[in-house]
Image (cartoon, rainbow, N blue to C red):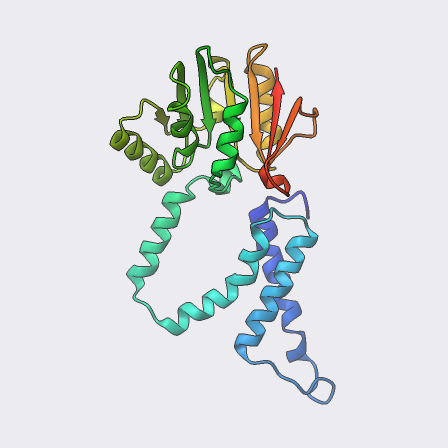
Length: 252
């Protein structure tokens, strides 16, 4: 089960949760007199699916999605919204999560504390080339650009909507940050002095292999929240309680 892609795991989890939630309906009323209503069934199925998701150690955003899936379907049926509204919602989600199925990297946004801590790791008085892998709305490189006038800053994002937002943001503010709509796996990390990533546990092993094979000696690889099993970090910066607020840095 754990070898399946997360999307297939989730499909199996939902099916198992439906079967388990239906058990009270299969029992004789003398053995189980309480027959849940449809909304109670949906909540029970969601709770079971969320529990199974935790047991299988899926990423942290999956249990809430499992819990809300069937209740959301029932709610949508009751609302009886026009068909075009569902199409619009689907296209909007597709624009923001274009590549999540393949890369297994959702849209994460770094906090201001994380940006400040990252800035403390960068050299102040020398030129540098910095890239944010999976740059989202461009908050990290735009924040750093104003504080490091000798630096050249880049961001790469595969999902079209966040990439477009970051490009508009740079244009409106006069920023020199270059935002590329490209898969970071197709880039050469040898061109950069600092590589920053806020991705997901699923993406880290492959990214670490890429960083080790491409980054120059003395360059810096920084990950927010997610470490790698292959090698302990050279520096750990804890911003607050919980691994989501921790910077891990490796000197190549």
